Image 1 (cartoon, helix red, strand yellow):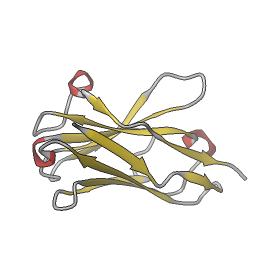
Image 2 (cartoon, rainbow, N blue to C red):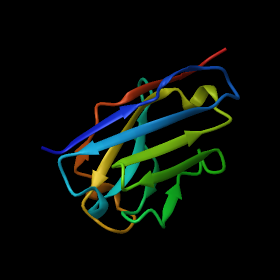
Image 3 (spheres, rainbow, N blue to C red):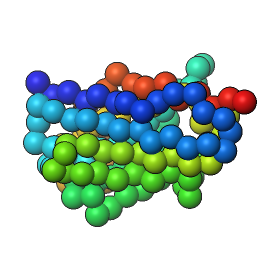
Length: 123
C-alpha cells in the first residue's frame, strides 16, 4: 500500500526556516518523481516544487524560487523541502505527492498524496 507521510511543519516567525520531510513506503520509491504542493485557507492547491526520480532534476514555482530547496535520499525513501526566509504568505498545509515517472512530472501525473503538514508563518 503506497503511503506518503509528511512531517516537520510548525509555527515559525517571518524570516525563519523549516525543513519538511516526506517519508514514502509501499512502492518503488526510486521510480517515482516527488512533488510538494501547498494549500492556504480559501485558496486552491498550489504546486511549489518537484524532484525527479534520480534527484538530479528539480524545479520550483516562482513564489518559492531562491528560498526553498528540494532534495531526496532514495536510500531512505525520503524527500525534504528546506524552506528559508519564510513569509506570512507561505502559511498553508503542505503536501507531498508521487508521480510514476522518472522525469519532472506534469501536474496531472501525480496520483498519490500524503495527508499534509501545517506550516504557519506569523509573528
